[in-house]
Image 1 (cartoon, rainbow, N blue to C red):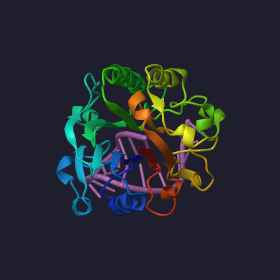
Image 2: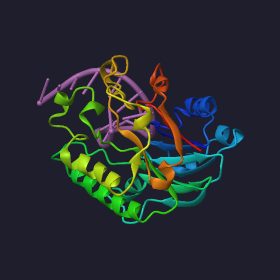
Image 3: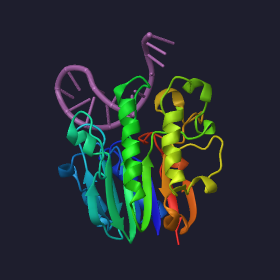
Length: 257
DNA sequence: ATGGTAGAGTGTCTA
C-alpha cells in the first residue's frame, strides 16, 4: 500500500495536479492539507472517476483537510478528542481528520502555523500539539500521523538557521513538542529514506525559493511502532513543486508492505 | 522594518 501526504494549498485550484499525482505514483491513500474548500464544494467528479472516495472537513477561506482513498474510508472522525479551538470554531475544526483506509488509521493534520513567537497563535499551536500527543497515546492499530506539522525539528531542516533566530517553527518548545511524539513511540518513517541536509518539503513562493532550494522540511509522516515496522520505502516528490501552478509544498510518499 | 507570491474571494486575511 502506498500512502502520501500533501499540503496542496487549495484542492480546487490544483485538482489537475492532484489527479496526475495520484496516477503518476499509483497512490492508494492521499492526505491533504490546506484544501481551502468547504465540504459542499467536494467531492470532485474526477476523483470518483479514478476510483477514489474522499472524506473532508473544510472552511470558506483557509485550512481544510481531507483524505482521498481507493482502499476504503471507514470510521471518519473530524478533529481528535480534546482538539483546542481558536477563533472561528469551524475553521479550527478543519485542521484534523482521521479515517481507517485499508486497515491503517490515517490522520491528516494541519498543525497551527503559530505566526510569531509572541502571538497568541503560537500558544495555541503548542497547546494543540500537546492535546494531539495526548490523543495519539491512546490510538491503536497501525497509526500514521501525517501532514504539515509547521515544525522544522533540526537546524538542517531549514535553509539558513540564522534567518530563523526570531521565528516560529524552530523554537525549542516546538521542537520539544515534536520530540514528544518520538518519545511516545512514533517514528519519522521518511527521514531514513531521504537523508539531508538540504532536503525539504516546502519552499516559499517568494523570491524563487524553490529554484534556489531555500526551503524547509516541515511535512512529516509519524508512524506508531506497528505502522513503522511495515514501511519499506519513502520519498519526497520534489519535482511536483516545480513550474507554474505548483503548491508551495511537495508531496511525501510512504510505502508499506 | 519591509516586501516579495499565491489563494481564498472582492475586504483583506492567511501563509
